[in-house]
Length: 178
Ligand code: IMP
Image (cartoon, rainbow, N blue to C red; front, side, top):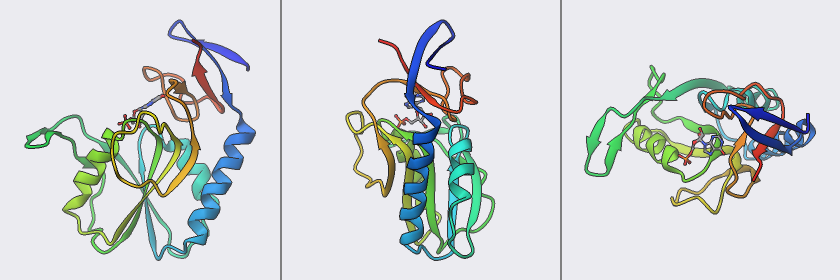
């Protein structure tokens, strides 16, 4: 499908299935080559579900573990603003090498909340893997270890990414028509 309509907005094909598959193999190779010891992959739901599934099939590191988590809605405020917690980490992950698996990093605010909530867990090292990255929107400083593809600031849907909760099931990635 070259174009489609979601909630009355028009989208056009942006990243094909074939390209997604090439991008994911590249990320998997890079992670495998880094020989991360006993890695714990933490997949951020909902958007990362397809990416995580395809990525994990190509990870060949020994003792690989996968956890699926969600960021809560805002739970309170502190000096740095609103607070969100990671829901779904129910065991001790201290000392672990964690790889955050994200669908897209835009401003980096979501990543900020994730890093905040991991801070108290005393993990050994945190790596970040994202399928898509919008460098022109990013306002944080965390280095992103594994980037699938850098994209302009267009709104995209498909392959896990939604537009108002629909479009996640699409096998390719589409961008909003201008
Ligand atoms: P950030 O907090 O601005 O980095 O945005 C991260 C989250 O916003 C992602 O995990 C997505 O859920 C959502 N998001 C950002 N850009 C897009 C987009 O182009 N399409 C769909 N969702 C997006």
